[in-house]
Amino acid sequence: MKKVITYGTYDLFHEGHCNLLKRAKALGDYLIVGVTTEYYDLQRGKLNVVDSVLERVENVRRTGLADEIIIEDHEGQKQEDIQKMGVDIFAIGSDWVGAFDYLKELCQVVYLERTPHISSTSLREHQYPILQLGVVGSGRIAPRFLAEAKYVSGINACAVYNPHEESAGAFGSRHKLEAFSGEFDAFLERVDAIYIASPHQTHYTYAKKALEQGRHVLCEKPLTFTVKEAEELYALAAERDAVLMEGIKTAYCPGFMQMMNVARSGIIGEVRDVEACFSRITPPALREMKDRQYGGAFLEFGSYTLLPIFKLLGCHYEQVEFDCIRAENGVDLYTKVHFRFRDALAMSKTGIGVKSEGQLVIGGTKGYILAESPWWLTRSFEVRFEDPGRIERYTPKFLGDGLRYEIADFVSRINGDARQSYCLTREESIAMAGVVERFMEAQRK
Ligand code: CTP
Image (cartoon, rainbow, N blue to C red; front, side, top):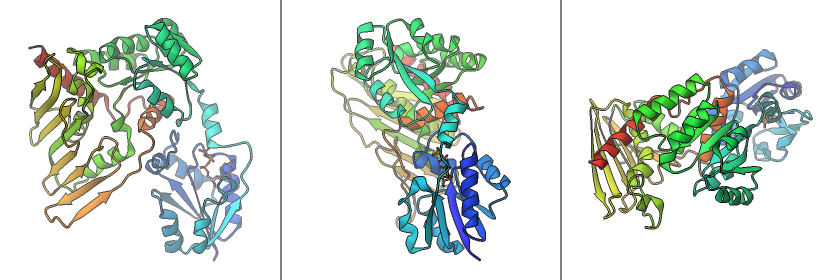
C-alpha cells in the first residue's frame, strides 16, 4: 500500500484545497492529511486564521478524501510522522517548491500544481473588508505598531491623530499614512478602529469617545486609572457591539500563553508564589521620569508584572501593599507591590531608576518555573524541581517585537464571533485598573 501525506491549515476550505487533496490521493492508496493547530500557526507567523482547528479538520473530513487526519503542532513533526507512519510520498502545493526538499532522504517529495486565483488569504480579504485603523498619538510606540501591523492581514493603518496637527502631519507623511488630523471627531470619521498610544491620562477619554461612535478600540496600557472607568468602557463596548482590548502585548504572545498553560498544568503542583520584575533605566528627560502624576515605574511597567500574577492566581487578592523609592520630583523610581491571596503570595517589581534582574519566577508545591529577561517576550522558560539535575526547557517562537500577535487578536475579535479575548479577559483588565487606582490613591497620600 502506497501512503501519501500532505499538510495545511485549510482555513475557509476552498476549491484549491479540494483539488490538492484529490491530486495527493491519486498519487497512492492511502492519504494522511495533517491539519495545523492555531498555536502552531501563530508560531510560524500565520496570523488571523478564521476557522478553528476542529472546523478545519471537519472540512477536510467532509471531502471523504482523507483516510486519516492528524494534527500538526510543531516544527520537525513532518519528519517524525513520515518515519512513524511509514509514508512513501510527501505531497504539497507548488507554492512550496523546494521548501521541503530536505524530506527527500525520508520519502519521495512531490510538488503538486496549485489551483490558480484562490487562497485562504484572498477569501479572508473578501469575507471581511479590510479594517481601516487610525493611530491616536504619534509618540515612541506608534511607529512600532505600524511596522508590526504590516504582518497582520485584514488591517490597514490609514490615519493618525494628534491634537497638535503639525505633529500628526509630520508623522503621517513620515509613515505614508493616507490621512492625519488634529480633530478627533474628523479622525474617527475615517476609521473603523483605533489604536490608542497617547499619554496614559488621555486613554479613557479617547476610548470612550471612540466606543460611543461604535469604533473598535485597542488601547495601550494602562487602560484607565480606576475600576469605574474600566467597567464603564467595557460596558460601553458591549452595548455598541465594539471590541475593546487593552494592549498588554505579553498577554497575546504564544510563548507567554504556553508558559501560563504549563504553570496551570500541575507540573509544578499548586501555584503558591509569582514574582515578576521589569526594570529599565530611563533617561531623565523622558516623560516617565518627569511627570509626577502620570509618570513613574509602576504606571509604565506594572501592567506587565501584574499580568502573570492575575493570570495564575486570579483577580481576587486579600491584600495589596505598595512600597516605592521616589525621585526628588516625587516620581516612583522603583516600586514593589506585594499581594496576599488566600493560598498564595505575589510580588511585582518595576523600576525606571533602579535596575534589577528582570525575571519571572512561578513557585509551586512541586517545582517552579523560571523565565529570564525578557520574560515578557517569552522566548524561553524552564521548569525546575527540587532535584537540580531535572530541568525542562521550553523555547517558544516569538516574531518581531510581539505587537503583531496583539494586533492579530484584535482583528480576529472584530471579525469573529467572540468579542472578548481570552488572552486578556475583561475581568483581568479591570482588576489591573483596580491596582492602578489603589496605587494612585496611595501616591496622592
Ligand atoms: N493549495 C493549492 N491551491 C490553492 C491554495 C492552496 O493547491 N489555490 C494547497 C497548498 O499548496 C497546500 C494546501 O493547499 O498544499 C493547504 O494550503 P493552505 O496554506 O492551507 O491554503 P492557502 O489557501 O494557500 O492559505 P493561505 O492563503 O493562508 O496561505
